[in-house]
Length: 229
Ligand SMILES: Nc1ncnc2c1ncn2[C@@H]1O[C@H](COP(=O)(O)OP(=O)(O)OP(=O)(O)O)[C@@H](O)[C@H]1O
Image 1 (spheres, rainbow, N blue to C red):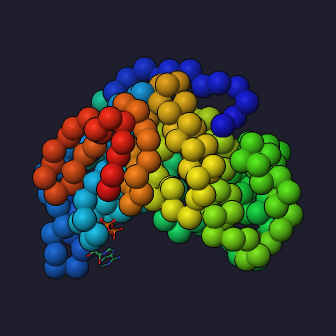
Image 2 (image 1 turned 180 degrees about the horizontal axis):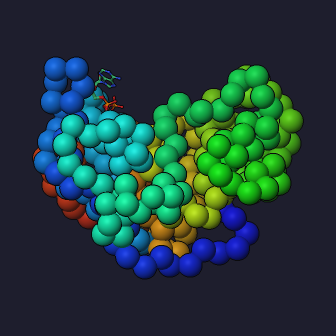
């Protein structure tokens, strides 16, 4: 995270109403209502191919829904404009790091793309925080899968404007220590009034998370803080 703690943002956060998604001829889902309230962690559940990534990309504004609308703090996202776009950070299953750049350059590039000021300095600080400072000058192609994942997740520390984190399989390839560190980061973000939506095929401890099952549309508290997908 950025050095300065972020404050609780007022409002209702990101909300999807009556969302539908079509892939080819197949209607993956319709009538999905989901709200990512400030201070919440939502675990998106569903079997392989049920549409979790598709829903996340719609919520992140990266693809257009077949039907429905997105709201940011109660206003249509298209009206909320830059404030809404900057408030959402999506980290997909693919890490989006460039193989031919160094880890530091690649992270700074992603920061710049997202409009982050002082992206190089922030990238260096984020890698320090992720305990990847010693890999900063290494070409991305030379990193292990876990190091790439940790490098991609260092984006969470780049931009404090991002209040809503949408994370597709963030725990993938992480070792036990990095898994615990990521959980602590997500919990701290929620405690500061941020919102998190994530998927995972691993069992992790995230006290206070709610589960949203895309297939049954059931919302429930994660049992004993454990979330299994
Ligand atoms: N660009 C695309 N074009 C056509 N079909 C697609 C495209 N992307 C995804 N699909 C299809 O949409 C369905 C849902 O995919 P999606 O990746 O959203 O599922 P998921 O729930 O995230 O799956 P997993 O748990 O395996 O990651 C799948 O049947 C997939 O083949």
